[in-house]
Amino acid sequence: MGFLGVLSIWQVAGFLKLLPKFILPTPLEILQSFVRDREFLWHHSWATLRVALLGLVLGVLIACLMAVLMDSLTWLNDLIYPMMVVVQTIPTIAIAPILVLWLGYGILPKIVLIILTTTFPIIVSILDGFRHCDKDMLTLFSLMRAKPWQILWHFKIPVSLPYFYAGLRVSVSYAFITTVVSEWLGGFEGLGVYMIQSKKLFQYDTMFAIIILVSIISLLGMKLVDVSENMLLNGNVRRIRMFLKRKEEIKMKKTWKVFLTLVTALVAVVLVACGQGTASKDNKEAELKKIDFILDWTPNTNHTGLYVAKEKGYFKEAGVDVDLKLPPEESSSDLVINGKAPFAVYFQDYMAKKLEKGAGITAVAAIVEHNTSGIISRKSDNVASPKDLVGKKYGTWNDPTELAMLKTLVESQGGDFEKVEKVPNNDSNSITPIANGVFDTAWIYYGWDGILAKSQGVDANFMYLKDYVKEFDYYSPVIIANNDYLKDNKEEARKVIQAIKKGYQYAMEHPEEAADILIKNAPELKEKRDFVIESQKYLSKEYASDKEKWGQFDAARWNAFYKWDKENGILKEDLTDKGFTNEFVK
Image (cartoon, rainbow, N blue to C red; front, side, top):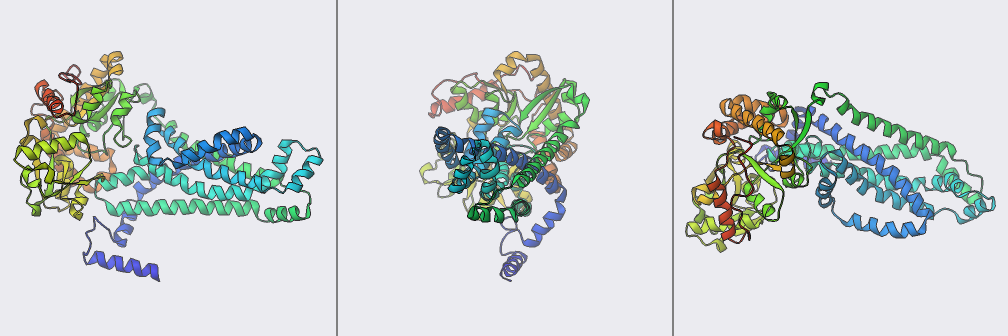
């Protein structure tokens, strides 16, 4: 009754509009999202399950092997156990980006992350089970001249099974949670990916549905562990415990064989499921050279030309199969720098410090001709110019370049930057915190967040950075490429960029059709088609004033921003004429 009462109050509060639905959707809206988005939820759930199960199975097998070795070899236990404890103290979300840089983009870093989080509880539990083996029975086995593997197989493993299941129960929940966290950092499918996309699109009813679904899957996984434990141990554990008391003979071969059969079957099912996605590829596409292209964010109208180039076959004409991928958080450039992908979407302002440190990247095309970013605020706060930021709360990423730019912006209009209150902004979209009053203003891109705020009924003011400081009309976003790739594959790189150029030119001429192509490749946008079309119509005019010159850089504008960077202490080195080229886009 208490739970139903909370749901009722929650529903009534939402019905009376005591809370905006983008802050807390009602239970009915969440239920409707389960029905409305059932196809997406099923697709992403299966993607998450596939990775989680594979990682869990491998983690269990590795944990069992390690536990046996650590029990047999004291020196190995002394070496590995402290390392395992240290790894467990590191937050999962901190390890994930590093694994991507080391292991590349794909399923491997996710599997490794799951293994790292699931092995520890099982190893500790099994070792605890081994330590609780009856010493008299161990002595009896020794007197009977049993070999170590016979003691392990016929006595230690059966006795430790209850302990194993205690650890497995914990690891199952860890596996699903870790999978979702790893999906936050990149990919195109999975509940974690869908959750981030929903949040960025203000689909909070879908977000809550995903959270509930993750909880249900975890609970079902733990329940399956309970069922498996009862099947394997019901009666046998009681007999073992009675036997330990009465010192009777142990006969547990059948139980262990059943256990191994179940594990083998599960591995087979997961491997077959994972193989299905690759087995169905078109043979024609297999002949094309596969190239990874890393986006900077969830698919949006900055990326439309890329999807148009793929949909219209421009990439195939260039002899390549371009795979557009979501990045680990803020890591698209790192993947290119480390040679894990040849191309990515990035930003001129973020490139500065990396170029200064010698990063091997070059901007090869400007996606948008002029900087469309600026400061948004609630209209009721009357922020009409940069000096009006004084006395207001600004949501900051706490980036040195960002804060230096804001200082220049405010002081250019005679304002006192020190009187601007800085509030941490860790949200993937800034509109919700502004609507909630967490802060008053934030830096956004009008072509997406600005139009999205308008579509959500948020009455806002917006001012472009470039309208107040000419140096801030830098290039954002841009397409970057790995320098070694450009050197070794110059002609291929030119063909790829020319195919992308055709995609953006098409989007400039056919904004509504281009928007539909984007939606087709990012179906989570389907419910917001009107917003996507409005955003596309805006950006189709911003890609370039002359479609034949799309992607070209103006050296004077590029250099002006890096000169400002140096004058304001952001850079120590002179980056004049560095970090960009028009060679591939002309």
